[in-house]
Length: 323
Image (cartoon, rainbow, N blue to C red; front, side):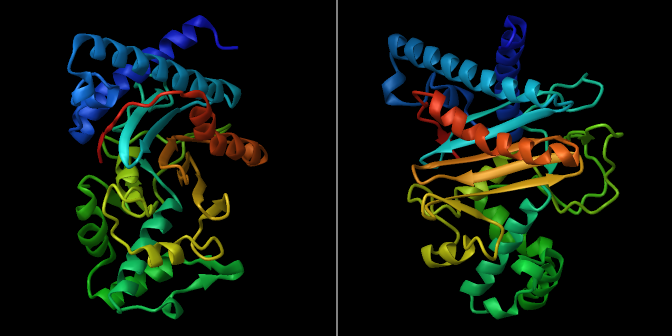
């Protein structure tokens, strides 16, 4: 059971993270996320009070679930999460720290290496070229066990598009999603980047090319544009999305007869999961910590279940704001 001090700290960190992260990272209306304004239903004082109270309950509920995971796995870093419902941002917050010295609180604006979630971005780029008739599925390279070869397919995308990989992604994925701060192949830590922490070893270095560096809100903006729901226009067709979410080819794991899908990643110093459920929810969780190998299976099961715990516990979500 969490101590009262932990509960209080978690709630404060969530509220501060939400306010600062949303203002500085995403220019998103905080009041709308908290359900304290921005809609006809909350124009009266009574409506504002009820909505604010509901948001406080939601925040406390989510913070307790994340702190339970934080304590159970003895995280030395922090957890950052963004959730959408009906393709509108309904929650973004964080618990824990951005550094190993525990002097900097982790915020939703902090970016992290996303490991093989970068493959998802490469797959989306390949699917765009497929729709343009510039690439076929037979052109793509897969390793043993039908694993998508990200590095080889990056070169194929460049050859087929006539652009650098980063230019193609920025023009065809990030720009339509309203994203301009993600970085590719950053072999250094930016001022907005969390420190990467591993269990039992020194903090992970950044000398190896990590793919894309992003925060959870940016990844959520991409996810709502490939999820097949109707409130935000997708950047891929329904048919192409079905091809892309084939679990035997492109890294997605499916549940509920293929109507929900998610992708879990461990990289030295980072762990992450992004997912889409059939009932209109999308979520991204980034953690600037990775466990020892022997503890990874249990850690990943817990990380995969974090959103579902939140989903079961939160009874009422705010209307949210556009992504």
